[in-house]
Image 1 (cartoon, rainbow, N blue to C red):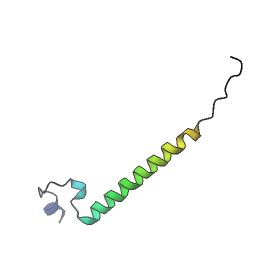
Image 2 (cartoon, rainbow, N blue to C red):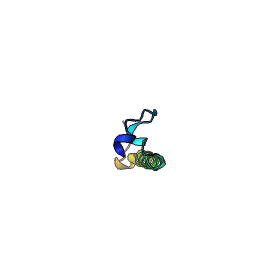
Image 3 (cartoon, helix red, strand yellow):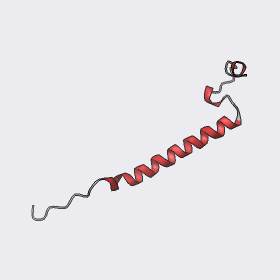
Image 4 (cartoon, rainbow, N blue to C red):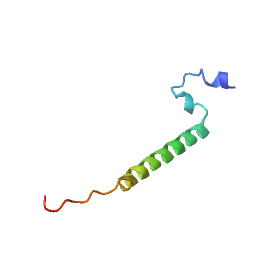
Length: 57
């Protein structure tokens, strides 16, 4: 069934040619990736120590 499905020229990328299940899995994966990246970027400043201000210089 794969050989009949993939060569079809319907304008869809290969990873979405499986139907609605592939589309849902793709969107779920992208959502988790974007959410994780946003969480990392919001927490990244906490990974580095704060520099103390110099007094009198």
